[in-house]
Structure formats: C-alpha cells, structure tokens
Length: 129
Ligand SMILES: [Zn+2]
Image (cartoon, rainbow, N blue to C red; front, side, top):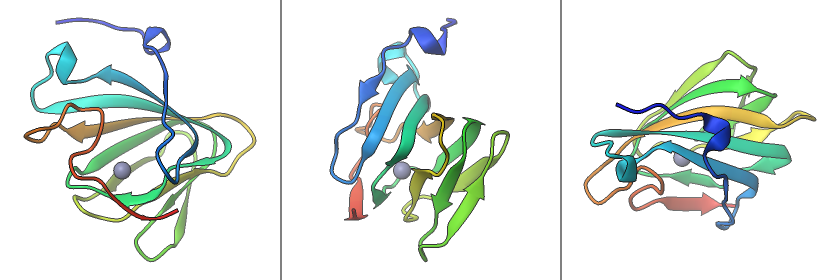
C-alpha cells in the first residue's frame, strides 16, 4: 500500500504530435508496482488538446476542474463539466480539448496491457492533428 499527493507527482510535458498544452502526472503506474491498471492526472491548458488518436487501452475519465470537449469518432464534441465521467472503448478514436479559460484537470485510468507501463499507450495510433 502507498499514498501519494497528486500535486507532488512530477508533471511531464507531452509534446507528441497533435498535443498542445498538455501535462501528465503518472500517479500510479507499473513502476510503482501496479500490475493491471494505472491512474494518471492530465492537465490541459486553455486552448490545449490531445491528438485525435486511438489505442488498445480503454480510458475511464473523471473530470475535476475546467471545461472540456470529448471528441468522438464522428468528430462530435461532447461538452464536459467538472464532476462528469466518460469512457472510451479500446481502439475507439477520441480527443480531449480544453474549451474553457482555466486549466482543465482530469483523472484518466488505463489498463496496463502486456508491454505497457501505465504511462504511454501500447501501439497508439494517431488519426490526425
Ligand atoms: Zn487516449
């Protein structure tokens, strides 16, 4: 067992193609001893976003602060507010955008698949910017 404070976990700027204003805090990952699933806190600056992408891992999201849009496979933007949760299935195309004027903070859990570390996705596929 262990306890951590999210604010004390180092933030890692993600500069992969299609990402903007995006910081990840890997709260619980394989390197911490997690075997099957990982928890990350994502912080996205106003105007920031992930790429449009898919990967074999499903996502479970819980939105803590800020306003967001979760973009689905058809490009439809689903408005998100704090307190909302969302799910994307394995290999489902998705994107998250900060649509507000404050920092967007969300928790994102993923399974740790064989070869995965709970940080990066296994075999992530970028669809477009
Ligand atoms: Zn994803």
